Image (cartoon, rainbow, N blue to C red; front, side, top):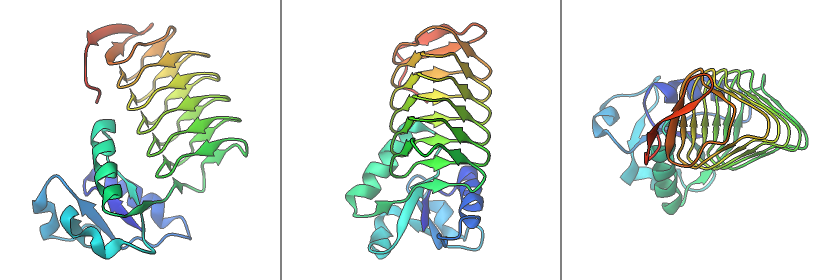
Length: 210
């Protein structure tokens, strides 16, 4: 496996991968800062995006970029170069048998995904987050540590759910919306807005996401 990205989150994902027996991490791919390719990360090579042809074939990759927008751009670029994606689920995560995970999704330590829930491609469910039954999470969504998403909710693509957020049952979060840390969401959130507080209220509009 190779990891897309060479920042701090890439090191965390490398730690997850190290605890999954079917994967062997062989390096990182960088697309933003070529200076990162000058030295190894965790003792492994950091390869510039233009040189990824060597990883085609049996290798798989996963994107360790926290920003939904940047993650979509990176995964689209790599996909166009012929690389394929793996889904990473830490052994301590609990995924209901009736739930489904999209390609390239990451489910971190202690995360729980309830029954009949759908997780989109390249979504990130970070440490200890709770996702209820019949939830739909779109592509490239970030769910940060400790977030709690109640059953029947819908999180559209490229949304960013910050640490400690609580989203009540049946709530919809629009695409590219940003829900701030510790917010309690009691009503639907439109696309391209930021919400904060208890209860969560719109504090910015017409944003491009996180």
